[in-house]
Length: 64
Image (tube, rainbow, N blue to C red; front, side, top):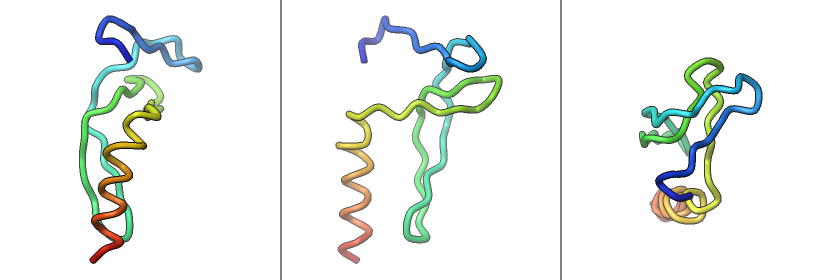
C-alpha cells in the first residue's frame, strides 16, 4: 500500500487511521499500528503484513 493511498471503511465510510492493535497467539501478545476504523473498530490487515510480521511471530512462538 502506498503512503498516499487512503483506506476507507466500507461499513462506515470513514478513513482508517493507524491505531495500536493487539494480537494474541499461543498465549503471547504483541502490538503494532494498523489501519483501523475510528467508528466501528474494523482493522485492515494487508497481505504483506500477514506474510511478513505475522508469519515471523508465528514461527518464533512455535519454535519455543
